[in-house]
Image (cartoon, rainbow, N blue to C red; front, side, top):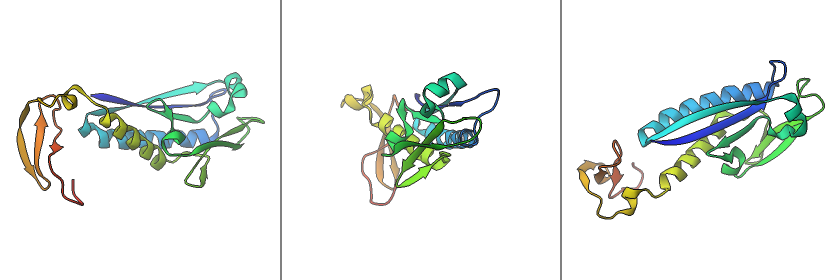
Amino acid sequence: MTDLTIAWQRLVDAGQTCPRCGDTGSEVRTAAATLTAALAPLGITVRLAEATINLAQFEQAPLESNRILIAGRPLEDWLGGATSQSPCCDVCGPNDCRTITVDDTTYETVPAGLITRAGLLAAAELLAQPSASHDDPTQETTGTTETCCGPTAEPTDLPNRSLPLATKAGCC
């Protein structure tokens, strides 16, 4: 199995976080659950790593709070977006908090849909990486199976995955 890590960090001061970080936390967990269900059949395990930063760290680098990394890259990089900032709340004091802009929309709370979209892009990149079986043209197969797209080969080192030998437009 291949791991896809979603890392999310936010400010926690005296047991409190700002509303946008709290709401993003719910969205991150929802996206992780969605990605787990979608990617498990492809042999990808989703790992969610949640971290906190303290007030001193936040004051030094406020845009590190509410930051999401997927496979080691910032969420906004996967989506062609940008990071910005805006005033937040009492927990954050005079510091502005992180926002992201994607497709001309600025988000204070990062929605699960954007996280899921970035996760799927990261998963596609993971699946496109060469493995020993993809590099070896002599790789044995266990046989073929007929699908709506034609026969599929089933490499012995990729259990539960079928590779289409032919595809029809609009299916599989």
